[in-house]
Image (tube, rainbow, N blue to C red; front, side, top):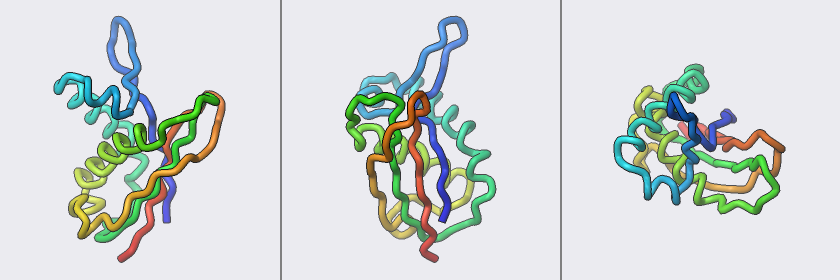
Length: 129
């Protein structure tokens, strides 16, 4: 079992840096080219964090949203997009063959608490094979 910290936002833009918040509301309204760029940036951030993982054929993923503020979060709103991006990274880097039900047995979302100024999603990867 492994726990990996994942970002809840990605900085982009050179002249005027902005944050792309990984949540369903932003995702559904973002232009396709920006989504593509954010998936690439997410992969660049996460790839070194999964480099030590072995190749797995069946896994379960549990995501825990840790908020950086005391506002009550919509956990699924954030975790569903982080899951989409993370599964793509696992597949692209050969850690799982595909993110279909044959290889990804279960996905769960939960609230991981509050950590002032250090928002993240912690994913617990449970190997089943």
